Length: 560
Image (cartoon, rainbow, N blue to C red; front, side, top):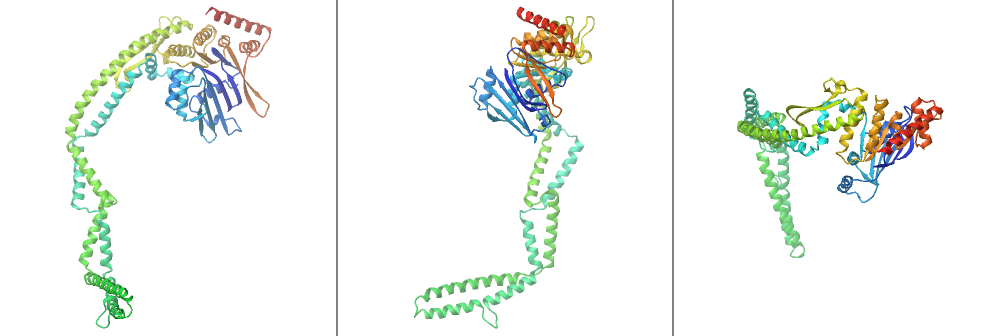
């Protein structure tokens, strides 16, 4: 149950704290005073989308805090699942929104994601607003009311799992079921690509090797000149010795000096090693020198191969590795098409089996819905009779449709308010006042199926007046004996049955506008009821009438 709501910097509310008691509470006030802001704040704290435009002018952020008590086991289970303490008697939800669009959400002081507020909110508060009435006019959503009443969630989930498998099989079959001409076109393309890549005899890293070989070929003369000079420097020529010979002679002389200076022995050995190294290098240079020569034919061959590799690269992949990977893919695709007929036969067989499973699951779901629809329509009609619609006929039309994600049922609410009129779709004949009462009746019927302790009605009295409004008020009071009911209303008939009445007032000093929320005393309630009934003018007659209304409502409550 919602025990306290604190609103800070939402629209024209600077700060307001409302302590909601058990029972039936009404929020009243002039049009535009800010009653809808209270509902917006409750939507905000229960995880619904909230626009930063709702932040009070001149402020950078807004905050809503709600305190709930009498927590259900379902709520405590959610807290445990999210590693939050479930031992407290109260649950404190807080949400802060800023102008940059960021949200800060907390549960009992601990930061949580917005999704958790929404999950908790669905089990803490049931809000009826204008969107519910719009949904009531959409026959495509009526099956959801029946599923909620009949508690067919498990049957629906089981069916949808099978139906999901069915859809996946259908997609794969469609993918494989190409016509013969399309199949031949794909095979021709794949065969061409496979042949082109296979005949190319791709070798990873080949282009780098070719580019290196071309660089050598195109610079063969320069390279030969360099190597010739290096060879002369290392091993010498006919005219003079090279470095290897000079070092050899130095090693020989140093070895002779070693007879007098023993420490030169190691130095002489090192020079001999250097001589061997210089000789090896010289031989390597000689080999490269004599094998490095320009060949126009070789250059043409390498150029041709490089062009071929570059052409294939533009079509199949940047590197040889990528082209080979693509080749592997298209070979696999070619095999899949070749074997597609066998796969298609297997899929058709599996598809038929899953269709049978889906039909069986859908029939089971449909039977449960039909039973629930009958009980639902009887319960709603009983509620509507109480709500001053004694001649109403309310039923659920169930039409079988092809398998879809919701089963095989297309359910529509049929309605007739007058004798002699056949029931017709609710969207075609219900007035605003009738729709409000139908919605209230459905909400009351569905409330027996959930554990939500707080029900909020935002202007449930739309299009209703007189005795019909009084009946709605009586029904809301009856509901409030088992759970908390909060109602935003403009009607005296509803407000007079409330256990607690709050007045929403908007005040302005010419510069700023503020909305305040005040819990009314008995005398203040008389004045507010007098204002609501008279349109603003309050005299002794209006006050006396208001007192009589409160007395009448009190007597009704005592009889219950």
